[in-house]
Structures are given as structure tokens and as C-alpha cells.
Image (cartoon, rainbow, N blue to C red; front, side):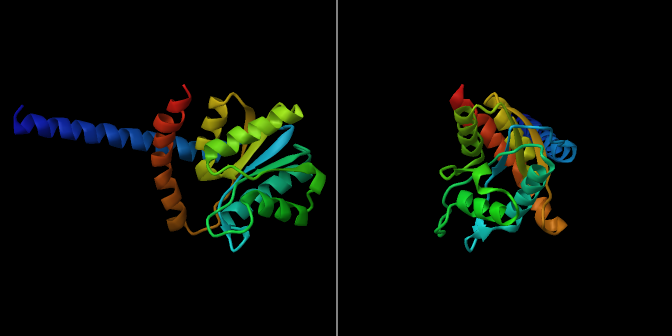
Length: 198
């Protein structure tokens, strides 16, 4: 093939990659705006990093939404899912449980998953806890940029769920970086996480 043909192929590949990326980005934004939590048996809060043993601002927003859903009576139990971050002494789940107790959620209504280290593990291990307790419907709580991947994971695993969006507590520039990275994470999940489970 000549140089011009290679250039055409290169332009075509770039166009396909750009189309793929923009499609995923559109889905991420769309899902974050349309999430409507319904009634469930349990609220599942997906973990995020701790700051000095406390929920980071991102995680705190997820917990605020979960506590509000609990107080509204949309579900009577809460699963908090998250393992041990590097450099931390407390698991994400234990820090989340402590935060929820301090904000009005009864200790007996909180179930912890202290081993999950990814979105896939968050949802999978929470689903196993649901099965152990005989729960059928979940409300997944995470930040709006993360909802599409969380929902896609739940759908892949056959979970009956609705989604609740937590806002991002940062300026628009910081928030945009989370959104812009998410299509890359989604691509990885589609090919290397879901693909391994087929």
C-alpha cells in the first residue's frame, strides 16, 4: 500500500476512535442526568478513596444521598462496599459505616463489604450479600459520572436495580476530568472485565 492509502486508513481509525469515545461520553452524561431511584430492599453505596481515614468529598456526597434515601424509606438497609486503600488503616466500608451511623442510619441496618477494590467487585460482592439476605432490588448510589459504568456492571450481573446520582463537590474543571476519563474506563470494562466473564 502507498503512503496515501495508509493516511486514509489512519484517518478512518482516528474517526472511529473519536466516534466511540464521544458515544461513550454521551452515555455517561445522559445516565448521570436521568437517574431516578425507585424503591428497593437495600441501598448499595459504591466505595471511593478515603482522605486521612475519612470519606473523601466524592464519597461523602454518595453517603449523603444514601442517608437521604434511607430516611425517605426507599430502602431499609444499606450495603457499604469498599476495601483497604493504600496508606489507610481503615477500610472504605468501615469509614462509610461510621459516617452513616453519625448521620442517623441505625448500625443494625448497615452491612459492610470490606474486600472490594473496583466497581466490578463492589457490585458483585454486594449482589452476593443481597442473595445471602434474600433481597431482590437494589438502589445503587454513586457519583453522576460513574453511574453508567455502575449500572452497566449491575445489568451484566443480572441485578435488579435503580440508580441514584450523587453530585460532584468540585469545580467544573476538576469534574470535567472525571467525565473525560470515564469513557476510557468503560472501554476497559467492556473488553477486559466483562469479556473475561463470558
